[in-house]
Each structure stands twice: as structure tokens, then as C-alpha cells.
Length: 276
Image (spheres, rainbow, N blue to C red):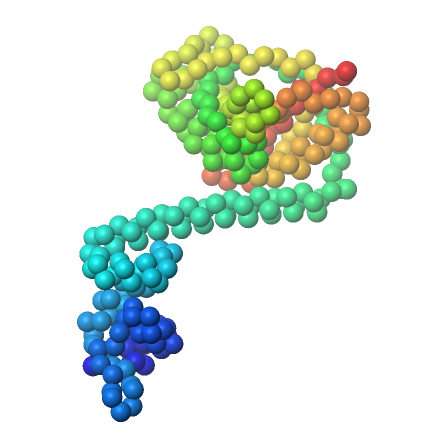
């Protein structure tokens, strides 16, 4: 048998933890010296310790852990529980990374305030264009909500167009509209690509004409779309300074679409404007 110190090292836990597990009846020592009170453990008790630690990592309370291990959860069940927890943690990490990227983008925008010029904004008419598109709903217009929705649409769109023998003839274009009437935050995300004027809808791909914009405030955004708020604020300042009002969501024309290196992307923002 092993002393509590040796058993703790073998199980890679603390002696204090083992004493606590003993006090609550979760993992009793195999023997206790009647004269010294020293605790001793057997090697086969590592099996129970491993299950206790694994179940704790699932977020269960020690009382819940005790009930489960006393019911002798088998390896298959435990493996399934741990795989589920792994998936949950991976999703949480991805969500945290997205939130961190959004915070960093907002910080860069704040740091650039006062240095952004409206000189690069161009007021122009945008001609109608025929596009093939797929769409999906995002919970809001925030970058962290738009990205995960729109990014998978383009590879799927290109795959379907290739299967249908349709070749894109111009840049990809994204545009947005409210998902439903009212004040809800959800938006309908359209992922499109320019196609020939004679192209028509095929299975699972809609072909439509984006209408002309009689007057659009436009600016070319360089870099990842995570940082697009900087360019959007330049547009906002120009619109305000020149007595216009924004009309709807900005179109995003991806002049240089770089899904693998988004920081190399070049995007023209086209925001319809009007005067009252």
C-alpha cells in the first residue's frame, strides 16, 4: 500500500484534497493506522480517484460525483460524458476568442478616433448587378454574429455554382436586411457573387438583380471585416457632415476576397444615402 503522500503524487492531486475526500466519504483510505492515524491507499483506488477528478471536470458537485461513482459508472459512459464536456469547452473557447477579437477591434477603433479622415469617402451612383446568392439569419448585425453566419455561405455558394456550371463574373457581395418587421435585432444575411446578366436561378441557388443605388456614400476598407467599424464610422461622419441620412444597411463588395488571410482583404462599403 501507499502512504497518502505517495498516493497523492501517483494520482497527481494534493494531500489536502485526499483528506477532504476522506472526510466527506468520497474516497476513503484502504487502511488507517490505529496508533498514528496515517492513511494508506491501494493502487486500485486510483481508478476511483480518476473518475472523481474526471467528473469534477464536468462541473459536477462533489455530492453528485459521489452518487455517480458509487453507482459504478462504466468507462463507456464516462468517456461519453467527457467527450460532451470537451465539446462544450471547445465551443466556449471559440466564443471567448470571438469576443476577444471583437474587443480588440473596438479598442483599435477607439485608438484611431480623431485620426480617421473622410476624404476617402466618394458619393456615387451604383449600377444594378445580377448576383447568385445564399442567405441565412444572424441574431444581430454585430461582427461577432455576422461572421459565423456568412463565412460558411460562400464556400457552399461556390460549390453549388460549380455543380451548376455557372462561373462568377465579378466580386462577391454581401448585403443585409431586417429578418422580420419590427425592432428585432436579427438580420437576414445575403452572401452573393456577381454572375452574367443571362444567368438564372438553379437548384438551391437564387439568382436576382440587386437594384441600383441612386446615391451611395462609399469607402474602400482595407483589412479584416472585424475592423470594419472604423470605416463605418468614417462614413457616418461624412454623412452627418454633408447633410445626408443613411438608408438601410451598407453593402459589402469584396474587391479582394481573402478568406484565408482576412487582413489582406479589400472591401468597398456602399451605403445608400438620401436628403430629407
